[in-house]
Image (tube, rainbow, N blue to C red; front, side, top):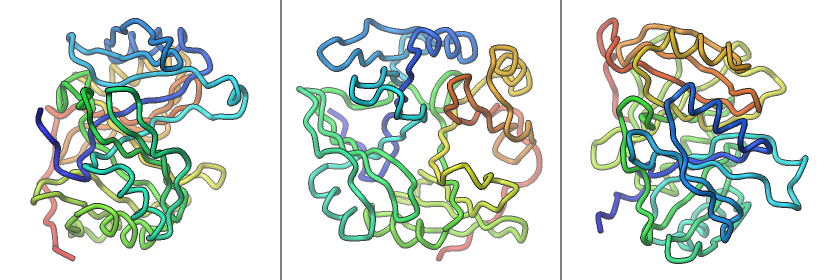
Length: 267
């Protein structure tokens, strides 16, 4: 079994009160198909792109009905979920759930950083995570969108073995967290124009698409929202969007790049 380096994004899931509505939306927008709901694990339902597992959706637990807002949760790989939970607590974060063993599949933790950014930790058992990445319909990137970049920079590299590089651009305060010199996570300092006052700091998950503009059109036609973009970048044409149940995510056409890649400066 391949073991992902610690701190590498390995899985994403989201909770939806209307599971069938989520299936219809993401099936149309990202081309996903869905497996059978696992009644043993709260009707946890895997999503597939081209037959490869790319994410999962799940309804709220009975005691969460009406409470939990829909949101995508990104899981970061750990060789020891319990040990990572201790590091989270020791560096000013909060453990919201776990460590919890999920049958033979692995062990999980749900936590948040000192500024409230929620994320997951996954210690793989038989479920190793994404079977497809960086291609249409699959996870491709994530970034911490936060009003408190300093808190994120102090927390995530202390919990995970991240190197930190600063994007050499005067326009935005953007950092890259890397593992073994491989970029795995972005961190963007958000201003009022990036994050409305009522919105929490969060971890934005990006899914790759073949045509950003056409995807955004489908999203809005299906009752979703466009928060930002579409915008060209050296990494691809992207947009920040939300689904009809309020879960924010990003879409990016990796094949449509514009401009030169920015320089990176080691911190």
